[in-house]
Amino acid sequence: MPLEHKVAEEALQRVAQHGAMEPLSGKLRGIRAARMRTSVGELDRTLVVVSRELPAGRKRGIAAALRKAKAELSTLQGLIEERALVGQIATRASAAQSI
Image (cartoon, rainbow, N blue to C red):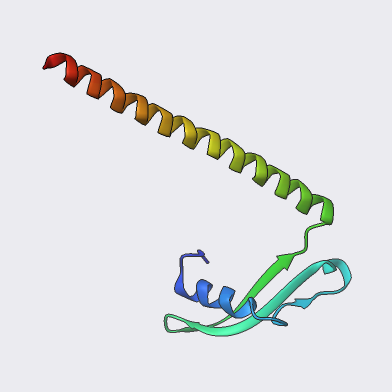
């Protein structure tokens, strides 16, 4: 179900509550899940939301990649602002020359 769907949003809000997700056992160890019944249109459905716990190393790697991406984004934003200022200065200089 697409995350944009109202029922999906409600399911995510419900499973975000403390204790809603339960750890599974056996081959599914390391995965947590929550089950809920709801109506989708006129149909009665059971939704299962699953969440896999990431190993600590993977979490650190994702955090590092996110920091790097944010730094690159900040650099790009600075370049855009710098070019906008240069454009404004050029426009003012051009206008001053035409007077």
